[in-house]
Length: 156
Image 1 (cartoon, rainbow, N blue to C red):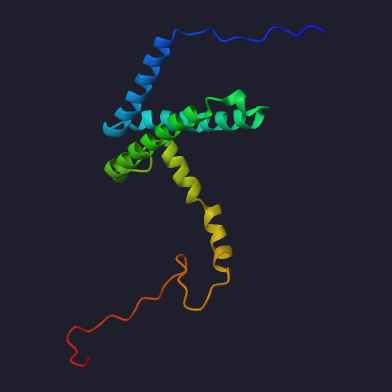
Image 2 (image 1 turned 180 degrees about the vertical axis):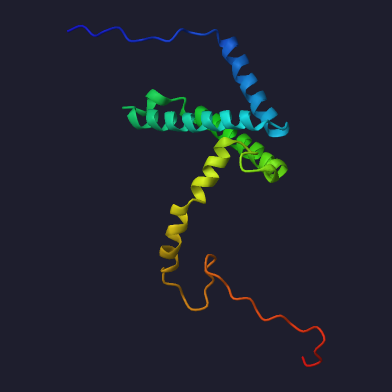
């Protein structure tokens, strides 16, 4: 039984691939240092999430490790992209976060509303039922404030 011909990707000139790789690294470095508008950060975050899912699916479906021999390089580029997006996102939140809910971008606003939704708040009583050692600090339990000091008292 004859096997169907495998789909082959067109071979690019090695110098074109090297130039594309260098331009991609330059774009990542520009994102690190230049202020990026929120809509570009949204597109970058969507691309990063899609790339992560794609890498995961390829890693799960390969039969032999040598089929995905470019994994270390792809992982390095994806990690550099995420680092650059994290820095750009932090810069936008700190510089424009006071302007409103969507000032830092729709992806960041969506993630913030997911994390701070009512579902998350309904989980809080379950978290406080966890047994703790006496005297241990539980960050989500309210701490009663100490009574205010009278600055004019003479007894100390």
